[in-house]
Length: 250
Image 1 (cartoon, rainbow, N blue to C red):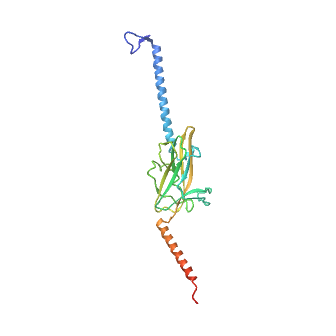
Image 2 (image 1 turned 60 degrees about the horizontal axis):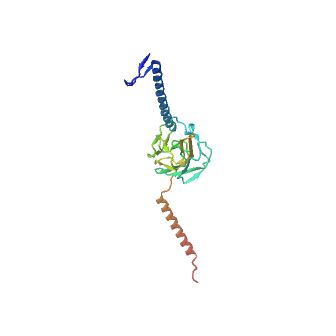
Image 3 (image 1 turned 90 degrees about the horizontal axis):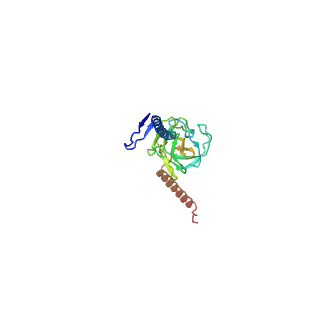
């Protein structure tokens, strides 16, 4: 059985068999199906990469990303300490400390030094207990609004700077402004700063634990007042010593 090929001109008509026409149609359908499958696979990969970067799984990044090093450093801390009597049972380790008074702000800075190819800074464990004075103590704070990813309602609460990911170009610093609310119990709190991403060799993550030490820090004006008081005491002591050394006339 033969049929006229659609679109052929009246001057030149090519007759094809029904079997040939069916083979051609089936091939076209298979090509379309293959392209749709490829598009679906790409869409799935994109959706999975986004979902796995910020999953609703309540698990650490290390559950899906391989532990790495040389990706970040932490700065902005004023000291470092190793707590020997941690109430959470964690072995003492020298960690960076960010000291802040209730009602003031601690600035925690993540320096990303290698974020290839796509990365995102994260901060978590802000819901953890006090680890020196009382396990019932909790860090009360307001989030940094410049960090777009709010996953505080997840099983493992955390905040991310750019949930869609940041394309790696050059080393960049990201500061989380932790506004500690008045009335927050005075204690040491364990906070984790990290960065996770995807590279040509797979997913990676690096995190560093730090301490947020909520304590009463003297205001600068109070420190100046105390300094003036000490200076006045020193002057008075010097005058007394000088007058005691004066030799009476004979």
